[in-house]
Image 1 (cartoon, rainbow, N blue to C red):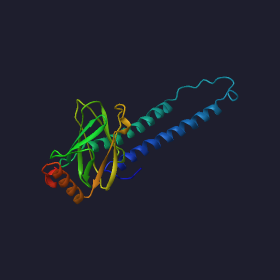
Image 2: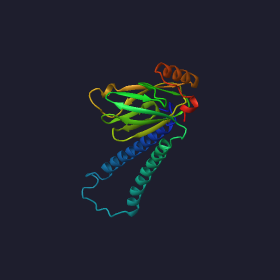
Image 3: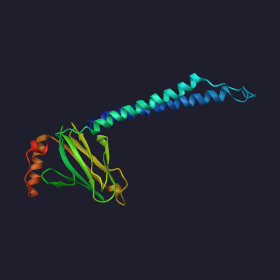
Image 4: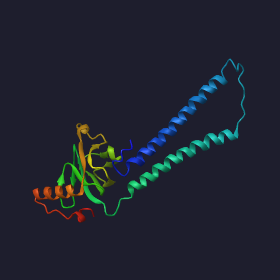
Length: 216
């Protein structure tokens, strides 16, 4: 929790804790009310059932309070979702192809790898596509997940300020080896990424684009 591995981590964690906290408070309230009613209206205390008239105030309260709580959950979730859909225009474009049971990443110059390498601090837009069944592109540390379909192009973006290696998993059951459909994203210093990109492109017989062009 709150590892700040990506620009979405803290917000997603905060919303999760908010919803979990409200749910816990509501749970405690329900349990306390149940215990109170069991004791207050037990057969020993009320051998003859008591007729209780309607109470408009209570009905308004138990309708309004949950409604406000649920709307607040929706609001914070919606704000976070809008941020995830606001892809920067200068984001680095990576084509992500899913197939049973591996990921392939293609850079703007045609370089293809089975592991994702990106520079620290750069906005990255992943264009998602499947060549067979449904998959889901999931980076747990970044708190991002998006379904990947064969007949539809999806996209997702992220930015990480924390250098390191992070798992990429498939979060949609896709067959026999689904559990082994793992890859990784490496967040690298800009100079290290530039060196890796040029060297790897040269080995593949490709002309590396300038870094400024890669990030557009």
